[in-house]
Length: 105
Image 1: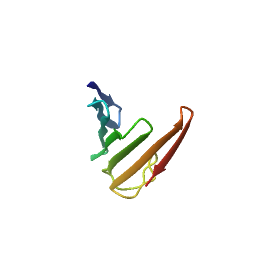
Image 2 (image 1 turned 90 degrees about the horizontal axis):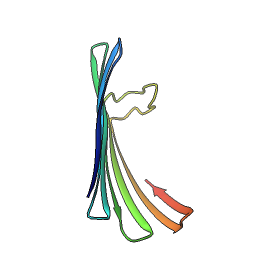
Image 3 (image 1 turned 120 degrees about the horizontal axis):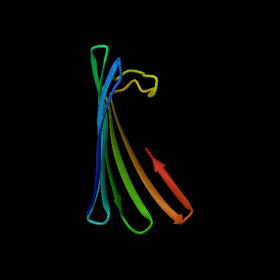
């Protein structure tokens, strides 16, 4: 099992941001990932985070799922998303070490 993580805090004159990430590989073929941050600006608290799961099915095929929570649920400068929650599913097939096919939904 491999485990990695970090925590960060940044203080600007008009904004406070606290965030972190966590990543682990379990059972040789299952990976989990979480990252996010919370910010306070002009009296408004918002948070954004991602949870991900990835599993290697065989030597050439991997599937993944990620859930994104966009706390502001409004279009911002860095994210043009108006929704609050998103789910992405993916399948990757490795034809050769230099040729991959990714299928996303």
